[in-house]
Length: 216
Image 1: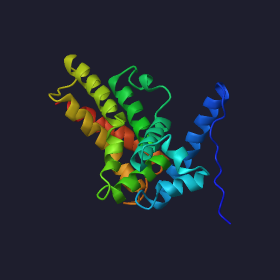
Image 2 (image 1 turned 90 degrees about the horizontal axis):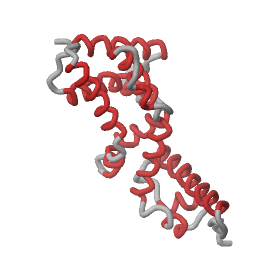
Image 3 (image 1 turned 90 degrees about the vertical axis):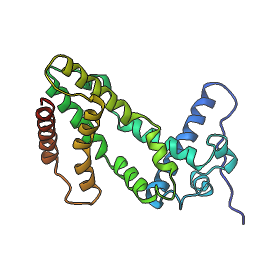
């Protein structure tokens, strides 16, 4: 007997239709994310996503153009969920050191989250065969926006003669890498993962080293 496809298209009407449409899209994204992170990008097909969601391919294509499009949507949702609720507050504080401490803690919390690590593993494993994976991440702009705002803080401190930095953007990029790279590498299995207490100390020591290096 041919397996029935459960169609869950929105009903006619106003608000119920919008709610159901959002629920369908959210369910598709949940299934796609689980398949991508568990089986990989190459091994996941649109047919599998549709089947596991309980929809037809027609319903899928009504919402997403292709596999790369839904992967971009998955990445966007992961980044949005990992972003702090009050981003603007991270760039305010009693001192530049205190602001950097808060930023460092937020970066570590996001980059070491299970979803972030799963996404990183996927990209490292398959980006060579599927360049669109890395492109999907870079297009979100979250990292670039963070570096831009850190650079603005560094430029402000330089104008106030509290730092001596000729290239604020370069310095901001280095700060980002100093904070995230080693803890994330260890969390991915390339070394012993840092314990919560060690992560806190790592953030403090990184900020201290960065600030002293930037004073010139």
